Image (tube, rainbow, N blue to C red):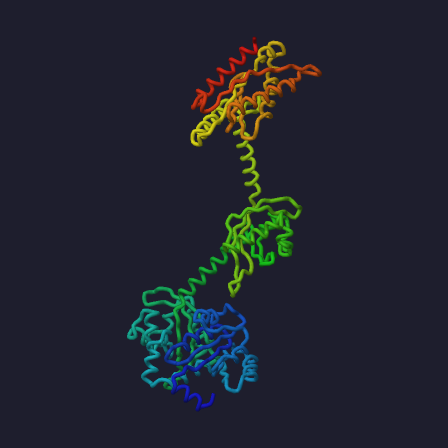
Length: 540
């Protein structure tokens, strides 16, 4: 930029547009200085390959353009200056050779001098002093380790008033365990001018009330009255260091959990490949870690590949899944039940790029649940079924009768019941024994049950009596059902042994709600009465 162009820009009040190459600690410190309003500088871009560098993090917070290729700066409108802060001569040479003619390159050694020059051009001496006093960065100077100037921010950081600080030994600001290093790095080398100072340094400090804090320092050498003087810029980074320590502990804790957990932690891409896994996967699935990273998840792990599609639909719809149960298969083909808790990972454009989550082997739990379910079902069967005939027992068939009566009342419906009594059971018991008599009861129960429709019920009501419930059935329908049962008994005789058969006979009584009664006891009594009437007729 020519002198005339610079003068015109200053007069119009436009900020100088500056880009920085190198996002390290120097960049971080420079950003803190260069973004002050008094300097009228606009940092428009920072370039570094390390996207976690301090200057890159600070730039991200300040919403400054970030790139990993400094040549991208050449497209920035109105860019005046590129400051090279990496300290690498090769990068500086590349910049000077490739830059457009209207862009000025400043090396790292001249960066802070550049700020000072700009400041002097912008402000009078009084304003410059005010800038130093009100700077958000602590500033102090010392000669022979004796402090001779401090600004307000210094007092805020260390707790000393200006009067208390002037004349004190600067080493008293440093934690005793860090003083030797400070003397070696700063004062000895600086005052003797043995070598160039490090631009950036972190150490522990001591406040007026002996609190330990963390500070970063940038030290520059000047000369006053022919005596070396140190100009020191300081920032209180205690919160940052505490956060770093917390993050470090969190990372270590996460790493321990990730590596040692019995649950399978994973990262996967959108195509169904693992990006990272912990060792638990080898135990659950029988693959090595290297083999897991090569698997096609849908094909090689899901027992049914269609379940992978359902999983993706669920997680992409809601952004996460919790306790999503599915069947996987091990390397030997064995099926395992797993529970997946996961969420989506998104790229910078907000598009789903993969998933991260935890897979837990729940095979034992699922098998236990299945066994409990089987036992519960068996228990319910034992509670509801008659042990001999495998039809409903007296208690259950009565419960069904109560339910059906209430249902019919609500719907103004009809239903019928039948009482069945085995006429010749005593004769069979007396002739062939009770074991054969029990078999005869089982034979009759099976024939009756096989004669009924879906929705009908039969239970053992007494020793040789059965109760049949026929929903939505009027009396003539019940009589038809009774005739069907009689016909089956006539055609399917009870087999004793070999070629011997025995006929069994039933007396059947029918009662219909609400014509014979509107309650259970009345219906039973009516059906009983008709059954005994039929029994008397059969004996005649």
